[in-house]
Length: 463
Image (cartoon, rainbow, N blue to C red; front, side):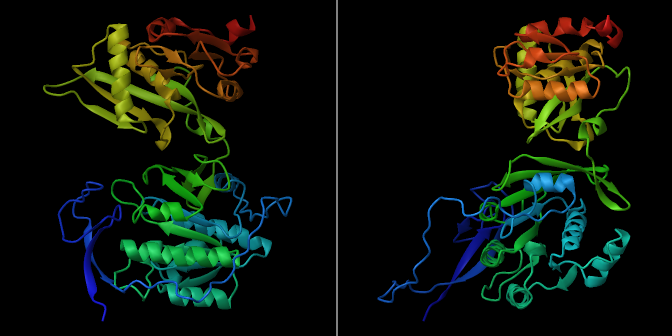
């Protein structure tokens, strides 16, 4: 008779141990090991019974275009890669209360307008709670079906009896399989439950939208294999105290990754922001020193965002480095390059860096903009408010070329910017063909301090 095996599994990374320890050696997480009972069964061979033959086909496309479900929310359809693909599995993760359930309820209510059958399955809220939210969003007259359940077997049986085209599971951490002894939310339960839903979606052509929790560190809770199992991973960014929300596609098998959709939280739910660049700029004619506008690329979209830096005298002890929306390690690198090439010392200064609007910048093209904001703050000299900056900084102080320079400048011109500080070398041959924008190309970081004297105005451009 098979015996049960005692096992301790890390709830952050999925590593297993034979005995409990306070810290996981794989992910360095503390108090993340939870006991799980695994039933040991003797391995069985395939035997002589033959398996079913699988269908084998070639690479030729059988249809001209794959059908997609549109939500009529352009920002969300952009992140999905052009709409929902039948049979796809999508994981939507974010902090508690940031708007995951609200956005998905709005999305499936929009899909239902096209005579699509949709079901919202909640394991966290009751039907009345969801109905109250729908009424607040003016969606109570939509044809969305509701269900409250956590048993995967019961949910799948109901879905098979009522064929559905879009299903929302809120959330995957509350689902459980009665074949496992582990509690809901454990690594084994999350992995097994997600696998069952994904298998059903692939076989029936149903779009499966899974809501996922995140840890206190901002990582998606549960095993990392969950992100590999699904087709698309969407992550909510932004602060709950801020009105703007950014939905970013971390992974997408049906569209570009790192695409973003920008929303504003209002009393009527999440409303899309169709021109994010104008939202993330303060519009001041004379911005204070330490403020620089960066022309970035988020997925396939150019976005202008404001970077603020504050360099202040520090107290006794180690200087403080506070960074919001940027990599703190990269900030340390930029400070070292500035100290080596400009003669400024930051050893006794506190430095605060902020990306306005709750955005998170990941591309190295923001190096030059951050360096300009720091130099503006330490010298108390503002940069011309009609100037955008972008470029990557090397360790020796050289300004390295970046991609899609002309796309960034066209977005800047559209919003009224007439000056640009860019790398002297560029991968875009059409960079010089953009009229109405005065381009200042620099090759070394040592050229940056002199650029704060540029005060080109629109009148001078016309003359």
